[in-house]
Length: 221
Length: 249
Image (cartoon, rainbow over all chains, first blue to last red):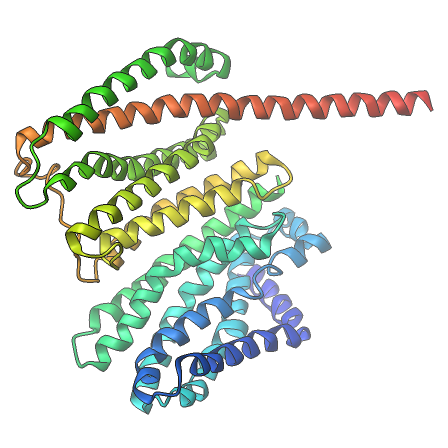
């Protein structure tokens, strides 16, 4: 575990030095979400009805924004080769990447959500459901993003490739995430959607760690 | 025995011998299956002539899934045993599978317009096939995204395996939507519920599509292999001319 903490501290510090990158993601989220009322019109009922889906989709896109540099910076500086050679299990390195990405990219978006849903006239209770579904769902989004980032490392147009790989795989998370909100909102039994969301998070985290470290090894060999 | 044919030269020698027979069978199967399905079978009392679309649609949908499954198996073999032919087979399968998937989507929507009154519906079956199509596209984009084609093939085989794990989840998650598409009437525990006179031409077409996949796969593997050889020959030539220049100067 010392390997993990070393990687985590390094990753955290490097990310905190580039707060501009992190702010860009939050700004993208805020600006894109405020675009929809312009297009949809300010009908209260329509905005309330579409808000959970819109917030989820925009969140999915925002999470992808800074993935192309996730491993590329370490690759360019030679750090990645050092880490793959060093006596750390590459899973620890990848887990540190995962955790920092979730904490500094996904979590700020979840924190922004209660403010953004004011634009959609969303009642407080529904906002609470939406924030909970995002809390439970964003770990899966980060996992799938990590898979896409590790696979596209060193590709010619990795920033274009990442959404192409990640978005189709993210569809189940979107279905259950929005499903959890709308089913609970309509006082139907939404429990299964919440369980599925939690299940996906548990399934995708180990899958993404394994895939990413396998991809990195194949990438550098 | 298997290892003997796994050697590329032997494999392609065998493939060359099989290919004409395979194409002959495909031609025969298409002639029999198409005439049987599109001309001889009686029009359905409800669906009328549109029932004939099934003879293209259902085999394409079967192949859409079968090709992905073979791609996943080939990718697994490529990753574990580092077998060059397995990688080539996976890469060569992808466009064929994408074409079958596209074909099943198009024929399905052409049938859906007169029968369901809509070209598209967000139904579980259709949606998961659409996602399968996207995954094929992402796989093909990934294969060709690297400067070094060998690296592209290696990375894409990891993606094929991830996709294989995710596909059941996708299938399961989209079943949450109310489903319009009818359920299977051929592969069932209690035997086929489809009338035998309709089933036989369908099975002929299914088998023909399967053979068509193998025939196309051998052809595409050959061209992929030729591309790999051409590239390495070109690289060797470039390297030699570089050393010659270095020696001359």
